[in-house]
Image: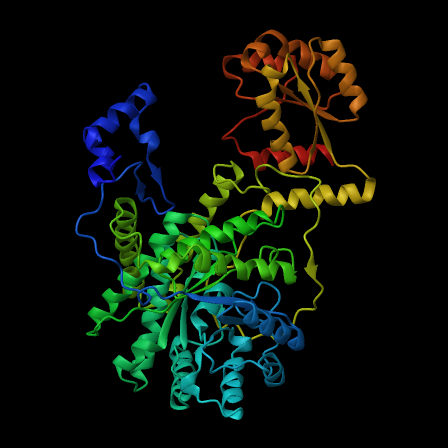
Length: 621
């Protein structure tokens, strides 16, 4: 037996595969259906083809240094400063290489956040060696803006060289105003305050960066990748201009601005979005007469994708988001703990968030290859189209006079609102699936534990002199979770949930598929489905329905069985007292006959599940 490479050249025994060969196979499977059925579209209308050739002449996007890991940032947001300090020390001792200090009032606080007072900052940072190579990122809002100054003063008081610290100060009044929908000050008045803080921190010896262009504002509000990228470009350029106009050389201002993007479970879009931002920012640098330098990009896993129901699935979503952001070149990643939508995460949730990154870096070695997507036809095409569309939208904001003027003119907000509406429609129809919330619910799931904590209350920030449409954060699963909450409240009050009786007709082979669908459909809305082994005659079915105590029923079977038995079954259920009768599946030509027999509604894949469930609740209350 030889070991020559020729013996292993198995591909040489096969004829080269061509696109035409592939299309012939696909057309055979489609059986006359249009090829466009296989073409996807993003919420920006970008076409996603089912197959791409390798991209020719592609080069890696310059980002992190070769083989350098991203910073494993751990979110610190406990309102009690002593508890926050204990969390920070524990995280650093167990693998975190940085801390994201989320202060109350920040866009990413989500109801909690650190106390921004000088006394609290002192306690939070106690025992943390800020000059030991760890990254520190501040997430602050206008109400907690002094936390940045308090951190700088702490460094000075401890005698730590500011240049030895890796602190991103997170100044971002534009992001706060966009989320709130107002600003107490005009942009001309905001600029001196921001640049004064930047100049003071730089004069003290801090390296920065200082100002954050935060795309999470758009993402969390339901916006698209193109809208998020355009917002980041517009905010970043606004800060860059402001810093230069304050008297700082443009080459120095270049490193004083950084970006923050959301990473979600859409692997390819997230990966392409991070790559696109680097290319777009380099374009701004070139247009400004600067030699491009890799932009520092921080990533937070997505808030809007988190679910309260079956919260452990959030671990999988966060893993995919971290994977995608890491391969896309993020310099630092913060994983939102899987229970954050329920409350303040406990030690287990925090550990999982931290270890998600540790496993991907230390065991999977994801950082060892620079821009592994380079040359991939699909990713290169998606990156290019994101760049083109985001640049066009960014130019619109520039024509409007910059991002603050664009917000005042409500240039971006209607676009984000339209995308959010489209997302909500697809969630309602379960085209975009949220496992555990809009599909595959578990009415008997145990509550995930969270910590008891009293949020910090901050004084309101100024008067809303400049008003525009707000971009508040949302969670995609919230409408379905509201129905589940009603069901839980009913269970707690009366000892029972609302029920639907599954009127399974025929044998298991006949009804199992649609009974499974119907069970998931109704229980997604907190309506308990009463299952059974099926019925062959209407009398037995009616008696079982009456004994179940349910007020409504859903017929479940095959089209063939429906044609023979559905009408009699519906009349029997109606006679047994069913207030409303559903049929699982599309009725087709038999709809008039089914309705005449007593069927009121039809539930099927692609229908508006949320609207149907909300209507079902109105009948049951």
